[in-house]
Image 1 (cartoon, chains in turn cyan, green):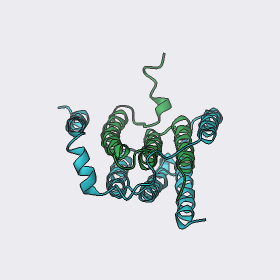
Image 2 (image 1 turned 90 degrees about the vertical axis):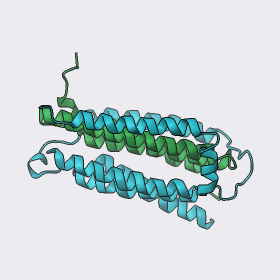
Image 3 (image 1 turned 135 degrees about the vertical axis):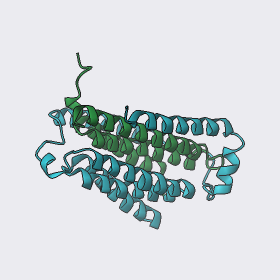
Length: 168
Length: 102
């Protein structure tokens, strides 16, 4: 077993147990902090896949910015993380059905993934996640989607401000 | 080297954990977190395929950048809607928000 394999199994174990904790814990604050950890382990998976720039963005955006935003939302709403809210349930009554749906979908996915023979097309790559390499591709072939995504982000920004503004 | 199918199995399990969370949770913030888990499972798939299928034109990584930006916009607007619902109804439990439900 190579070092990469060992790293993959360790990272995968922590990643999946973190995700399971998020969907099963009763305390929302714990779920949010576990979200931070889980997203960092996703970044570790990206590093295993030679995507260093994406890993850095993952830590910045998902682990950093999103966790902060969700914590702010938690503080602005009285939910199950506050003492008087702890008595109300965080899960609904359809847990069994939800589990069956997820397990069934997982069975289908695993059947497809394991039945198929995956052959790498162009052989093994060198490290291609460098910023200059990515920048060259984004700003030549994908410049239109790049501009569109910035319009989308601007629209979301304006939309959030308009939505949460107090009317008077 | 870790084969491609291992990454696919990892992201499939992660996606299904997210599906379970979306279906079983009442709290809207926890549902958003579960959606984030599903989004990240898809991103792992993108990057794994980019590494093993098109290692030199890293299309999957570019798509992941765009998916991250879309995810950031999604969680911003989602949290704004949750705050609005909380202001109007004093709850963020999605099964108590049933005005549009037959």
